[in-house]
Length: 304
Image (cartoon, rainbow, N blue to C red; front, top):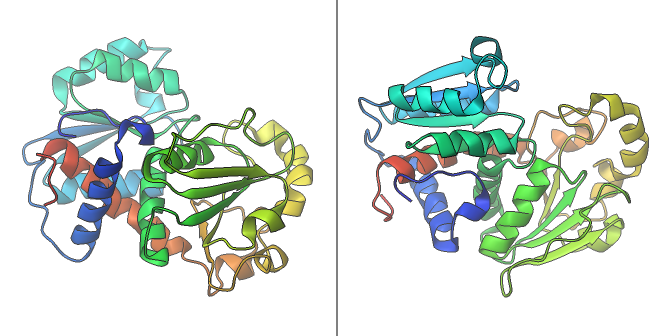
């Protein structure tokens, strides 16, 4: 995928996605990726708070020999001080690529349209593809395979869930989305013919009884703060606690994209318990994003 934008999981074909995961696994085992970003600079635009995304991308860019430049809302005021297109055109004169964690998917695509250098989606309100690439690596490590792996997403139909559904379409996961009525995909997206299986339900027992992974995320995403109390009430029965986890096989692993609102969508004893792989999952953000950068800036499309 050399020189291409990465705006959504669906931008990748099956072989491309698996190749990125394979490269990430090799880098994690100690393979030297080289310095494909030597003498290159990448802008990182953050209009939303960031911990894992910023640190993992900055370290990955540095590890590949590049220079990361973090830009925040107060500095560029994109859409207010300057138009989205003008920000893209100016940055394109200075840097070799852009990594954007911004609220608007429309603005992300506006940046990509204005720039000739690659643009990477580090999160919008609509999708979180880098997170789900790292999650796919975690599932592969924990379950032993990705195609056909049974993943149950317990929670809101948010940006992470949408990217999981795209991953299902690309690599053939068996995805179950569980949540209260009114917070589920409607209409239910149709996986590509022959790709994956998608079940949408409000019944946790139906989805969890044979699952490999129990995955959850916050009930209230950024920008939804005024809905917090209503969401606490509606999602209460879907808290990933010991009782809910008991509906899944003992071998099932627990995942969370973080940050966690401990005591809301997940309890401490589950997040810190023996079935949790949450912090291994967080580490994989670094390895997958380094592999993604390698694929975009190194190429050709063979594994390193």
